[in-house]
Length: 481
Image 1 (cartoon, helix red, strand yellow):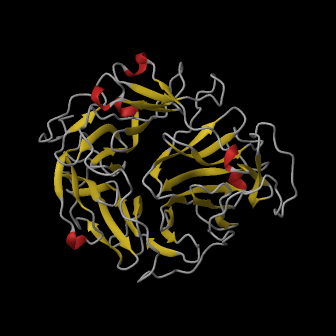
Image 2 (image 1 turned 180 degrees about the vertical axis):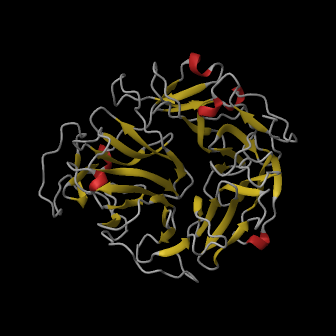
């Protein structure tokens, strides 16, 4: 019985899935790796720099009224689904909407066959986008995220873009929607809306959304308000985790079972979900070479931090017991670099480049490396898997699952045990496919290209219809151009 894979891609704003070549029998579990543990040990708090507006504990909408809010109720806009209520925890002047109980959650993701003219011979399914008009070129936002719940079930965080509302969801690929929130503000299509959810992350059963602005009728660019909401993936009314009213950076947010991580140019901090600590993980002041961070991978209580410049790429690790320390790093050596680390809590995978000129930014020789999972640099046991089919490292992330790895910069799947690789056939636009992750049987990806005559979709495909594997022993070398 052949294994099957799904490549999920938002096309110009939709999510699609394509079929890939068979990658062989699954040899491991698809569950997330190391479990979360509470912070402690040597972790030191820098002191809270924010106003904590919520407790950070689990909270679900249990009734179908809007009682208990300090904000005066307002009429529900007609485009908001039936059974949804006002969410005013962030601001009385910036109202979102959530289902009052699970029975009002949106229906599960529906998958339909992909058009043969788009995917050739690949056996593929795509996400049906029936929440908007056919004229809408972007029914799915371009930045979906793939994670897992605490049992290892794959979860997709994505945004449905309708004609008169935005809906952010966390949903199982082949199961129920777990949570959802609607923005039906008067300026959702404005280039400077008054307030909005600013991207999110989901993993290990938790999710987080950044929030910016505070007045739906104002301009976010003129508002000092920023922060985040989030909680368990089944929270229908997630608590406010942090809310600044002045002087804060525009943070990018990450989450797993142990931590809420916020990242900016000025520094990267983690907080437990109780939000009672604010712990510095990395910034240019404590980095041995003054470099800033650009990549993050959370696993249990560890945070892997990639930092890079135009000429350098390094990987560090932070744990509450040992703090920040170099992990795969080449001090003073501009010819080598390491980046893009991904992990499932069982293995580590990263890209390693060598042979670079000191003033160049691409690596003539680039390899995919792996090692058993560890957070201690002295215990790292690297092994080369195969060549990377590109000379860029430090720009994309490796995503790991069930003994396979994919890279968010190229549509391929590599088997870690022997280095065999499967990729989207050459006749398809590979550079536009951006994988989100990999399971035991499927590659989930997006497509970033805009197409005038069609709408973007999520797609699923069989692995046994992908290109024939490349030789795992071949080196990827930069050409004379």
